[in-house]
Image 1 (cartoon, one colour):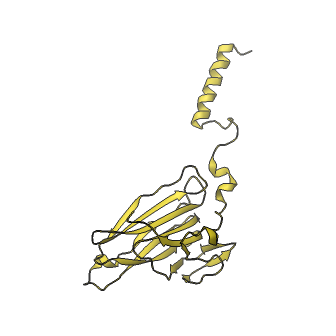
Image 2: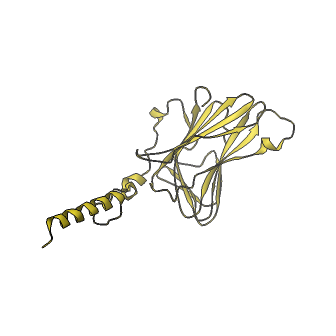
Image 3: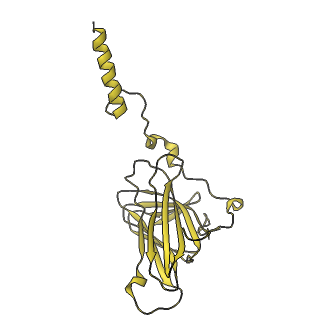
Length: 219
């Protein structure tokens, strides 16, 4: 028979191990990634919920998009990628003072990214800085919480530059990877941007609720 003090000591050690996540005998896992509802896609925004925004993806066709590579439409989701690389370009350019938002889920061993491709509103003298694309990594396949995320990309004006602010947040509440990435384009007279999604072979990118609208002031 175990002595009472020995049993108390064992219980205390197991309790500490549970707190540190070192023991498999601590009851059900609290890992949010194990909850299947976290990977469910967000609901589609209805016309009544647009609030002045306009859809860049109508959830039924690829009208307004130029897509090269594997892709398909399913239940309001645009799926990009597969065995081969995929490049999807939104034909409508984004102007200063506008905000783009979209929901995405990325999976697979390879990566995916959003690239903002600038074009000058008015011709300027040649300068390589004017032609730079701004890449934003969407590769969350190794992220602990397997869930949909939302991206907000705002185009503001700062001095003589076009300022791009991109934020990413987790859907369904709880911890997530969070944003604040800022990039300033030295574009005298301003820029307009095209959204370009690039998916590497072996990865998939799922998009929903791709919307554009105005925002008040610079971010």
